[in-house]
Amino acid sequence: FLWIGFNISDFQRSPHIALFPSAGMGHLTPFLRLAAMLSSRNCLITLITAKPTVSAAESTHISSFISTHPEIRHLEFQILPINATNPTTDDPFFIQFEAVSRSVHVLHPLLSSASPPLCAIFSDLVVASSTAPIADDLCIPNYIVSTTSAKFLCLIAYLPVLTSDSAKFNLGCTEVQIPGLSPLPITSIPPPFWNTNHLFTAHLITNARALPKAKGIIMNTFNWFEQETIDAVSNGGVLDSLPPILPIGPLKPFSFEKDQNQYLSWLDNQPAESVVYVSFGSRTAMSEDQIRELGIGLERSKHRFLWVLKSSKVDKEDSKDLKELLGNFFLERTSNQGIIVKRWVNQEEILAHPAIGGFINHCGWNSVSEAAWQGIPILAWPQHGDQRVNAGVVEKVGLGIWERGWGWGGEKLVKGVEIGERIGQLMEDEKLRSRARKVGEEAKKACGFGGSSEKALTGIIDMVTRN
Ligand code: UDP
Ligand code: UDP
Ligand code: UDP
Image 1 (tube, helix red, strand yellow):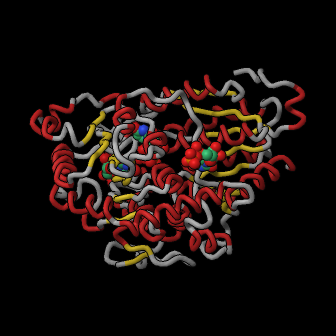
Image 2 (spheres, helix red, strand yellow):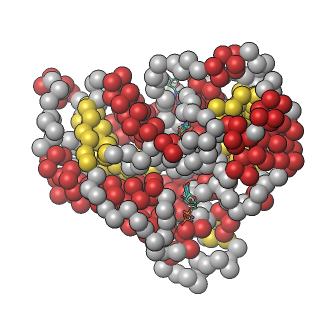
């Protein structure tokens, strides 16, 4: 890798920042957005990515981003092979987190010879502990980018304390108390957190310990949206060792070529706010039984729907067709009511479409921030990881409803009748719709001129430039 492509005149006025996301679209997407935002504000950006990626979506998005943003440099490095089997999880994305972290040292010589020299590294929270020593050694300020809610970030930050005190943190408790925050119900704690040897847990604990070394934690949220949490962290109420948190969301999407797929022309022909959009993000596949029940629920609700269906966690392995999953009879019966796609869609474009009136979603944090921006009400159906804590944030701010009894993904089979009733509630509750609109207005205020997120971003660029 050679540091060519930037002009000398660029060096003099623009800070050079390296952005380093970890694995999965949920991590890559906010980094690409941040890269485009910083670049449009006159920063020189180098995007660091690890290869090979787990999903095809990641490699496709990296290539198209780089080709549509020729001003951004790309530093790609090869992950060192690790023993891919892990006794605590078979999740390819968690294993990739670990593999990326263990390979970070190969970046040391590349970053040290960066030209112009780096003013800052913005690294993913899940590589924080491996990037910190390099940044330290090279005297480059390191900022962490969190891809989750401020609330879940607090849980991660406090995890080393919690897991060291089994008297206060065990399955027999009803709540978990994080200083400064309202208590978290025990049912929102991701199940792997009860096992400190679980790869996901061990990895987060290690990275949480590195947080105090960072200059700041950049967050895809906004003050109004998570006020209580942001105030508590900012006042040192959660942990006094945490660096400042810098909420700059909802991160602004950048556009590729418009998607020409038929689902968009189908949406164009539907009445305003009449369609429920169903998607569980880039890496969640429900069981086939649950997929069938969800189909029944959509049909019974009688609402129009656009359903993005995944039957496998990794996109490359998703080979089952709709007939196999739902049967011809179902597809025929619902052909006038909705449309089902099994491919990557442009979610931003869908959520912005006037025909969309509600969103059934797992509460991946990017999806939440996109729905917040568009003011679209959510029926939260959290499945894994941070998603129950995120669903709590969505419910509290009034952006959506959440049926806690549905459990974690795969914990139980939620019946179609019940799903249908909840969809009715999502699509027919005017109060919910107007509150969601208000969330959208507040998101736009935050990102607009003089808004809290816009000011925070300007502040970050100033800090980095002054360094
Ligand atoms: N996404 C998309 N099209 C798809 C699936 C996902 O555009 O077909 C985007 C979605 O808009 C979001 C990201 O991929 O920006 C998924 O991140 P999120 O945090 O919502 O969930 P995850 O996939 O990490 O569970
Ligand atoms: N999972 C997921 N996204 C997450 C967290 C978990 O898709 O953010 C999946 C994970 O791969 C596994 C299941 O959910 O298939 C349960 O996850 P857990 O972390 O509990 O690990 P496991 O039970 O596989 O050891
Ligand atoms: N924007 C933002 N965050 C987002 C989406 C958009 O800051 O999540 C900003 C961005 O500056 C963009 C402008 O708002 O150029 C308008 O965005 P969009 O086209 O989505 O606006 P809408 O058509 O929804 O009003």
